[in-house]
Length: 442
Image (cartoon, one colour):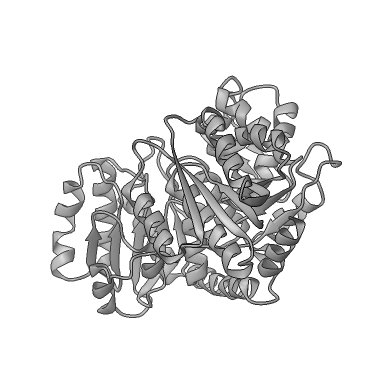
């Protein structure tokens, strides 16, 4: 029987895509290992995720997909019976060497332990975010109150200090069931067979060093191997040329500001108007802008504001999905305004494009701190107390990035890190070596 690895991502494009790309990476460099990916499908799953999987299935028939329909956040626990049966079925024809799970699928450990299958975790976030996750039990032990009742800086080894209000909401309330879930996950990860991280060593060296030295885990006797195998980004976008790429062809080199806020980013009409005004003011100078937004509330406020820019051909708006990787790698794009999802940050790094950090939810405010203060590859966009980024704030940050010496310094650093990313995934690079070590551990 052939050796097999089962990948088990959480639901949602931001988790599915990097896990599938991991499967493609293993299959490419170690074709003797068969890859099966179990997909949890929610009723409201975006069509973009479905079309992405269909594209991968057509291009990589050696990767097997099993779909399980789920219905809630606790999908992994609720579907353990289905997972157990799927693994038993695969075991009848393959030698299952490992189960690689997303950290949102921690309940799956109950199944892998029962079947005596080594469990690895896949972290689709930065090494700094992993530091914080592994350090959660220590923070829980050292701080008796819920962080929602405090206004403090929270420290984790190897990372910049994070304002408590910038942590994910579920980590602020000790009584929340999801809070305890993350504490349990962190403890379980520390006892696992290994942790695979979608990053490369030189992107977060302090964080990687802190994890390897056991500073993030409460019991240093539990220190799983860490495999930094990134950056892995999607290479399965549609080959059909999008109209925005044709528009970009007509723009000067590095002149376009690209705005995109992920698959779950939504804005109020008030925020869209402020955004449009800020872009208009900057657009009157020497830059164009390309606003790509996946889901928009009351978009008319934005489109009415952009009419004049459209006539001057300084702006372009895409209402739905756009090929982000292709856009970032287009020669006319010089700046990325991002919600700070880790996949988007990696795609920008790989393209050598500096960033303005405009986080919206989940761990994105943490990522802003890592990006701006730790990696020094972007500038912070600040919101008011009511959560609105004003037109003036957006205009100032765009101008600072495009015209100041600090902006030029950030651009030089991003290009240097891009070269490190290329080196990491080449033959003999740190990420390629880490991938080989993971396969050897099986």
